[in-house]
Image 1 (cartoon, rainbow, N blue to C red):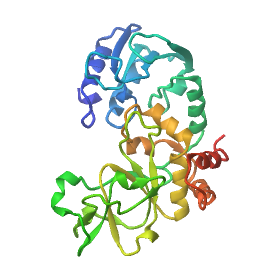
Image 2 (cartoon, one colour):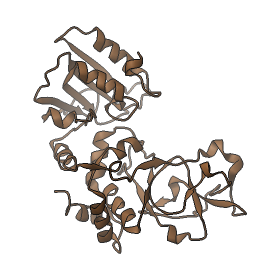
Image 3 (cartoon, rainbow, N blue to C red):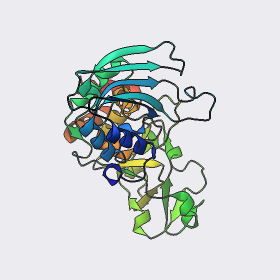
Image 4 (cartoon, one colour):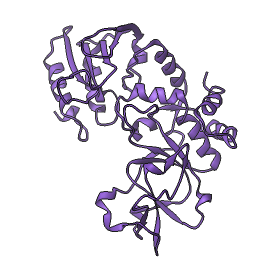
Length: 328
Protein backbone atom coordinates (compact mmCIF):
# COMPACT_ATOMS: atom_id res chain seq x y z
CA UNK A 1 0.00 0.00 0.00
CA UNK A 2 2.84 2.35 -0.87
CA UNK A 3 0.47 4.88 -2.44
CA UNK A 4 -0.91 5.83 1.01
CA UNK A 5 2.24 5.32 3.11
CA UNK A 6 4.71 8.02 4.11
CA UNK A 7 7.16 7.91 7.02
CA UNK A 8 6.14 5.78 10.00
CA UNK A 9 2.54 6.59 10.97
CA UNK A 10 0.24 4.50 13.15
CA UNK A 11 -1.11 1.54 11.16
CA UNK A 12 -4.82 2.18 11.70
CA UNK A 13 -5.17 4.22 8.53
CA UNK A 14 -4.28 1.17 6.38
CA UNK A 15 -7.53 -0.52 7.42
CA UNK A 16 -9.41 2.65 6.54
CA UNK A 17 -7.66 2.91 3.17
CA UNK A 18 -8.53 -0.70 2.35
CA UNK A 19 -12.13 -0.05 3.39
CA UNK A 20 -12.28 2.90 0.98
CA UNK A 21 -10.82 0.79 -1.82
CA UNK A 22 -13.41 -1.95 -1.28
CA UNK A 23 -16.33 0.45 -0.84
CA UNK A 24 -18.82 0.58 -3.71
CA UNK A 25 -19.68 3.96 -5.33
CA UNK A 26 -22.16 6.08 -3.36
CA UNK A 27 -21.94 3.76 -0.35
CA UNK A 28 -21.00 4.81 3.18
CA UNK A 29 -18.24 3.91 5.61
CA UNK A 30 -18.22 4.66 9.35
CA UNK A 31 -15.13 4.23 11.56
CA UNK A 32 -14.12 4.95 15.13
CA UNK A 33 -10.52 6.10 14.70
CA UNK A 34 -7.76 8.24 16.21
CA UNK A 35 -7.77 11.83 14.96
CA UNK A 36 -4.06 12.04 14.12
CA UNK A 37 -4.72 11.53 10.38
CA UNK A 38 -6.26 15.00 10.04
CA UNK A 39 -2.95 16.86 9.64
CA UNK A 40 0.80 16.43 9.33
CA UNK A 41 3.16 14.98 6.75
CA UNK A 42 2.85 11.30 7.69
CA UNK A 43 -0.79 11.12 6.59
CA UNK A 44 -0.52 13.45 3.59
CA UNK A 45 -0.61 10.62 1.03
CA UNK A 46 -3.53 8.98 2.80
CA UNK A 47 -5.53 12.23 2.92
CA UNK A 48 -5.01 12.66 -0.83
CA UNK A 49 -6.25 9.09 -1.39
CA UNK A 50 -9.25 9.71 0.88
CA UNK A 51 -10.35 12.93 -0.81
CA UNK A 52 -9.69 11.59 -4.31
CA UNK A 53 -12.31 8.93 -3.57
CA UNK A 54 -14.62 10.13 -0.80
CA UNK A 55 -16.26 13.09 0.91
CA UNK A 56 -16.93 13.54 4.63
CA UNK A 57 -20.56 13.91 5.68
CA UNK A 58 -20.50 13.50 9.48
CA UNK A 59 -17.96 13.83 12.31
CA UNK A 60 -18.41 13.11 16.02
CA UNK A 61 -15.79 14.33 18.48
CA UNK A 62 -15.20 13.42 22.11
CA UNK A 63 -14.29 16.09 24.64
CA UNK A 64 -12.37 13.72 26.92
CA UNK A 65 -9.76 11.26 25.74
CA UNK A 66 -9.88 9.06 28.87
CA UNK A 67 -13.65 8.51 29.06
CA UNK A 68 -14.41 7.14 25.60
CA UNK A 69 -13.17 3.62 26.35
CA UNK A 70 -13.46 4.11 30.10
CA UNK A 71 -12.84 0.45 31.00
CA UNK A 72 -9.63 0.30 29.02
CA UNK A 73 -6.31 2.16 29.29
CA UNK A 74 -6.82 4.03 26.01
CA UNK A 75 -5.65 7.65 25.98
CA UNK A 76 -5.76 8.16 22.21
CA UNK A 77 -7.78 11.10 20.88
CA UNK A 78 -10.64 9.40 19.04
CA UNK A 79 -13.44 10.41 16.71
CA UNK A 80 -16.25 8.84 14.70
CA UNK A 81 -16.38 9.69 11.02
CA UNK A 82 -18.71 8.88 8.13
CA UNK A 83 -17.60 9.21 4.52
CA UNK A 84 -19.38 8.54 1.23
CA UNK A 85 -17.59 7.26 -1.86
CA UNK A 86 -18.40 9.98 -4.37
CA UNK A 87 -16.77 13.07 -5.90
CA UNK A 88 -19.32 15.83 -5.23
CA UNK A 89 -18.70 17.50 -1.87
CA UNK A 90 -21.73 18.46 0.25
CA UNK A 91 -22.07 22.10 1.23
CA UNK A 92 -22.06 21.23 4.94
CA UNK A 93 -20.59 18.66 7.31
CA UNK A 94 -22.64 17.65 10.35
CA UNK A 95 -20.48 18.08 13.46
CA UNK A 96 -21.48 16.58 16.80
CA UNK A 97 -19.55 16.34 20.05
CA UNK A 98 -19.97 14.86 23.52
CA UNK A 99 -17.79 14.58 26.59
CA UNK A 100 -18.18 10.81 27.00
CA UNK A 101 -19.12 7.65 25.12
CA UNK A 102 -22.70 7.64 26.43
CA UNK A 103 -23.38 10.57 24.06
CA UNK A 104 -25.14 12.64 26.70
CA UNK A 105 -25.29 16.42 26.25
CA UNK A 106 -24.54 16.23 22.54
CA UNK A 107 -23.69 19.51 20.81
CA UNK A 108 -24.64 19.59 17.14
CA UNK A 109 -24.18 22.09 14.30
CA UNK A 110 -23.43 22.22 10.57
CA UNK A 111 -20.11 23.60 9.33
CA UNK A 112 -19.20 24.63 5.79
CA UNK A 113 -17.40 21.79 4.04
CA UNK A 114 -14.56 24.02 2.83
CA UNK A 115 -13.97 25.28 6.39
CA UNK A 116 -13.49 21.75 7.77
CA UNK A 117 -11.62 20.38 4.73
CA UNK A 118 -9.07 22.98 3.69
CA UNK A 119 -7.39 23.46 0.32
CA UNK A 120 -4.23 21.78 1.66
CA UNK A 121 -6.39 18.78 2.69
CA UNK A 122 -5.92 19.32 6.41
CA UNK A 123 -9.12 18.57 8.33
CA UNK A 124 -10.05 21.11 11.02
CA UNK A 125 -12.09 19.50 13.79
CA UNK A 126 -14.31 22.28 15.06
CA UNK A 127 -16.58 21.57 18.04
CA UNK A 128 -18.46 24.86 18.38
CA UNK A 129 -19.52 27.62 15.98
CA UNK A 130 -17.04 30.05 17.56
CA UNK A 131 -14.19 27.88 16.28
CA UNK A 132 -15.49 28.27 12.72
CA UNK A 133 -14.99 32.03 13.16
CA UNK A 134 -11.43 31.46 14.37
CA UNK A 135 -10.64 29.40 11.27
CA UNK A 136 -12.16 32.03 8.98
CA UNK A 137 -10.06 34.82 10.54
CA UNK A 138 -6.75 32.96 10.44
CA UNK A 139 -7.28 31.46 7.00
CA UNK A 140 -7.58 34.97 5.55
CA UNK A 141 -3.81 35.28 5.98
CA UNK A 142 -2.01 34.30 2.78
CA UNK A 143 1.51 33.75 4.15
CA UNK A 144 3.02 30.95 6.22
CA UNK A 145 6.21 30.73 8.26
CA UNK A 146 7.56 28.72 5.34
CA UNK A 147 6.82 31.41 2.75
CA UNK A 148 8.03 34.11 5.17
CA UNK A 149 11.35 32.25 5.36
CA UNK A 150 10.91 31.80 9.11
CA UNK A 151 10.73 28.01 9.35
CA UNK A 152 10.25 26.29 12.68
CA UNK A 153 12.73 23.47 13.28
CA UNK A 154 13.11 20.80 15.93
CA UNK A 155 15.91 20.86 18.50
CA UNK A 156 19.01 18.99 17.40
CA UNK A 157 20.19 17.02 20.46
CA UNK A 158 18.57 13.78 21.62
CA UNK A 159 19.97 13.90 25.13
CA UNK A 160 19.70 10.20 26.05
CA UNK A 161 21.65 9.31 22.89
CA UNK A 162 24.35 11.92 23.55
CA UNK A 163 25.06 11.47 27.26
CA UNK A 164 28.83 11.40 26.73
CA UNK A 165 28.65 15.01 25.45
CA UNK A 166 26.53 16.48 28.25
CA UNK A 167 27.98 18.27 31.27
CA UNK A 168 26.63 19.63 34.56
CA UNK A 169 29.23 22.42 34.71
CA UNK A 170 30.88 24.79 32.28
CA UNK A 171 34.30 23.89 30.92
CA UNK A 172 36.43 24.23 27.81
CA UNK A 173 34.43 23.90 24.60
CA UNK A 174 31.10 23.76 26.44
CA UNK A 175 28.01 25.55 25.19
CA UNK A 176 24.52 26.12 26.63
CA UNK A 177 22.00 23.33 26.01
CA UNK A 178 18.39 24.49 26.19
CA UNK A 179 15.48 22.31 27.29
CA UNK A 180 11.75 22.97 27.46
CA UNK A 181 12.23 23.68 31.18
CA UNK A 182 14.18 26.81 30.19
CA UNK A 183 11.00 28.34 28.71
CA UNK A 184 9.38 30.35 31.49
CA UNK A 185 6.71 33.08 31.30
CA UNK A 186 7.54 34.11 27.74
CA UNK A 187 11.30 34.18 28.22
CA UNK A 188 14.16 31.70 27.95
CA UNK A 189 15.94 31.44 31.30
CA UNK A 190 19.33 29.70 31.49
CA UNK A 191 20.73 28.12 33.55
CA UNK A 192 17.94 26.94 35.85
CA UNK A 193 19.93 24.50 37.95
CA UNK A 194 18.99 21.49 35.85
CA UNK A 195 21.48 18.70 35.27
CA UNK A 196 23.25 18.50 31.90
CA UNK A 197 22.69 22.14 30.88
CA UNK A 198 25.97 22.19 28.94
CA UNK A 199 27.13 20.31 25.88
CA UNK A 200 30.84 19.74 25.21
CA UNK A 201 31.53 19.24 21.51
CA UNK A 202 33.12 20.75 18.43
CA UNK A 203 30.82 18.90 16.04
CA UNK A 204 28.69 21.44 14.20
CA UNK A 205 25.85 18.92 13.83
CA UNK A 206 25.23 19.40 17.57
CA UNK A 207 25.52 23.19 17.54
CA UNK A 208 23.64 26.17 16.13
CA UNK A 209 24.43 29.83 15.77
CA UNK A 210 23.92 31.97 18.87
CA UNK A 211 21.37 34.40 17.46
CA UNK A 212 17.82 35.47 18.28
CA UNK A 213 15.22 32.71 18.43
CA UNK A 214 11.70 31.95 19.48
CA UNK A 215 11.67 28.65 21.39
CA UNK A 216 8.46 26.59 21.58
CA UNK A 217 7.80 23.55 23.75
CA UNK A 218 7.20 20.43 21.67
CA UNK A 219 5.16 18.64 24.33
CA UNK A 220 2.46 19.81 26.73
CA UNK A 221 -0.10 17.89 28.74
CA UNK A 222 -3.73 17.63 27.60
CA UNK A 223 -4.87 19.40 30.75
CA UNK A 224 -2.65 22.48 30.35
CA UNK A 225 -4.39 25.72 29.46
CA UNK A 226 -2.21 26.41 26.40
CA UNK A 227 -0.92 24.09 23.70
CA UNK A 228 1.55 26.66 22.31
CA UNK A 229 4.05 27.66 25.00
CA UNK A 230 6.95 29.77 23.81
CA UNK A 231 9.82 31.90 25.03
CA UNK A 232 11.98 34.61 23.49
CA UNK A 233 15.72 33.89 23.34
CA UNK A 234 17.98 36.91 22.76
CA UNK A 235 21.61 36.29 21.86
CA UNK A 236 22.66 39.61 23.42
CA UNK A 237 21.96 38.10 26.83
CA UNK A 238 24.62 35.42 26.27
CA UNK A 239 27.36 37.25 24.32
CA UNK A 240 30.14 34.96 25.60
CA UNK A 241 28.97 32.04 23.42
CA UNK A 242 29.42 31.70 19.69
CA UNK A 243 27.15 28.66 19.58
CA UNK A 244 24.31 27.13 21.56
CA UNK A 245 22.33 23.89 21.31
CA UNK A 246 18.73 22.75 21.76
CA UNK A 247 17.31 19.49 23.03
CA UNK A 248 14.83 17.82 20.68
CA UNK A 249 11.82 18.51 22.90
CA UNK A 250 12.19 22.17 21.92
CA UNK A 251 11.16 23.69 18.59
CA UNK A 252 12.85 26.89 17.47
CA UNK A 253 12.53 29.66 14.88
CA UNK A 254 15.64 31.63 13.94
CA UNK A 255 14.99 35.39 13.81
CA UNK A 256 16.91 38.15 12.06
CA UNK A 257 16.07 40.76 14.70
CA UNK A 258 14.83 41.21 18.25
CA UNK A 259 11.58 42.68 16.91
CA UNK A 260 11.01 39.61 14.76
CA UNK A 261 11.36 37.33 17.80
CA UNK A 262 8.85 39.45 19.71
CA UNK A 263 6.48 39.46 16.74
CA UNK A 264 6.51 35.68 16.44
CA UNK A 265 5.87 35.52 20.18
CA UNK A 266 2.80 37.76 19.74
CA UNK A 267 1.42 35.32 17.16
CA UNK A 268 2.10 32.02 18.90
CA UNK A 269 1.25 33.30 22.39
CA UNK A 270 -2.09 34.76 21.31
CA UNK A 271 -5.38 33.08 22.22
CA UNK A 272 -6.56 32.87 18.61
CA UNK A 273 -3.50 30.97 17.36
CA UNK A 274 -3.50 28.63 20.35
CA UNK A 275 -7.16 27.84 19.62
CA UNK A 276 -6.39 27.44 15.92
CA UNK A 277 -3.65 24.92 16.64
CA UNK A 278 -5.86 22.94 19.02
CA UNK A 279 -8.48 22.69 16.26
CA UNK A 280 -5.82 21.56 13.81
CA UNK A 281 -4.02 19.06 16.05
CA UNK A 282 -5.62 16.97 18.77
CA UNK A 283 -2.36 15.61 20.15
CA UNK A 284 -0.21 17.23 22.81
CA UNK A 285 2.79 17.46 20.49
CA UNK A 286 3.56 20.71 18.69
CA UNK A 287 4.47 19.61 15.18
CA UNK A 288 6.83 21.92 13.29
CA UNK A 289 5.42 20.85 9.89
CA UNK A 290 1.93 21.96 10.94
CA UNK A 291 3.15 25.22 12.46
CA UNK A 292 5.11 26.01 9.29
CA UNK A 293 1.93 25.62 7.22
CA UNK A 294 -0.36 27.73 9.44
CA UNK A 295 -1.49 31.00 7.84
CA UNK A 296 0.36 33.99 9.35
CA UNK A 297 0.83 37.68 8.47
CA UNK A 298 3.68 38.79 6.17
CA UNK A 299 7.14 39.07 7.68
CA UNK A 300 7.12 42.87 7.79
CA UNK A 301 3.85 42.84 9.77
CA UNK A 302 5.35 40.30 12.19
CA UNK A 303 8.19 42.77 12.79
CA UNK A 304 5.71 45.61 13.38
CA UNK A 305 3.87 43.42 15.90
CA UNK A 306 7.20 42.83 17.64
CA UNK A 307 8.00 46.53 17.83
CA UNK A 308 4.58 47.06 19.41
CA UNK A 309 5.22 44.28 21.96
CA UNK A 310 8.72 45.32 23.03
CA UNK A 311 8.69 46.99 26.42
CA UNK A 312 5.33 45.45 27.39
CA UNK A 313 4.63 42.56 29.73
CA UNK A 314 4.71 39.24 27.86
CA UNK A 315 1.11 38.39 28.68
CA UNK A 316 -1.47 36.65 26.53
CA UNK A 317 -3.75 39.68 26.87
CA UNK A 318 -1.11 42.01 25.42
CA UNK A 319 -0.52 39.57 22.55
CA UNK A 320 -4.27 39.48 21.89
CA UNK A 321 -4.55 43.29 21.83
CA UNK A 322 -1.73 43.57 19.32
CA UNK A 323 -2.85 40.77 17.02
CA UNK A 324 -6.40 42.11 16.91
CA UNK A 325 -5.05 45.20 15.15
CA UNK A 326 -3.97 43.05 12.22
CA UNK A 327 -6.33 40.05 12.18
CA UNK A 328 -10.00 41.03 12.32
